Image 1 (cartoon, rainbow, N blue to C red):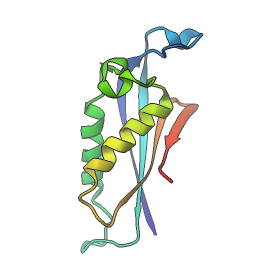
Image 2 (cartoon, rainbow, N blue to C red; image 1 turned 60 degrees about the vertical axis):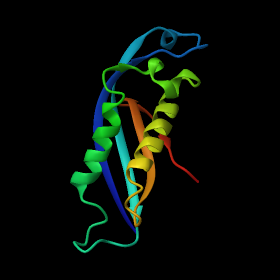
Image 3 (spheres, rainbow, N blue to C red; image 1 turned 90 degrees about the vertical axis):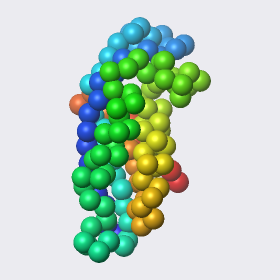
Image 4 (cartoon, rainbow, N blue to C red; image 1 turned 180 degrees about the vertical axis):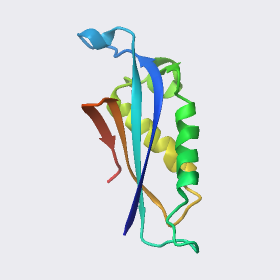
Amino acid sequence: MFRLKVQDYFSSAHFLRHYEGPCEKLHGHNWKVEVVVEGEKLNELDMLIDFKLLKQALRETLEKIDHRLLNDIPYFLEVNPSSERIAQYIFQTLKEKLSSYPNLRLREVTVFETEKACATYLEP
């Protein structure tokens, strides 16, 4: 089994609905995102996927939420834009982008709200 990890960043604002505390007010973060993919079979170049392609797919995903108010994005109209839900959103969006790589499985997405606090989403 092979695993690859890439990281990128985005900035956005959000507020948590029905939350009592400072996070109920509009505020922003510089988010760090880590993506882990895995697979057993390498391609003809002995790579699971070219890092360049994986980073490009992540960048395209993050461009949709970068410098945005997350609460205005359709996905977050029904759910709070918590770190957990942001990780889930990125996972689901990225999984679709990577579906053309049959030997590759998106393992997990971790979203860091701060250096010391993060949430990870993975499917069973």
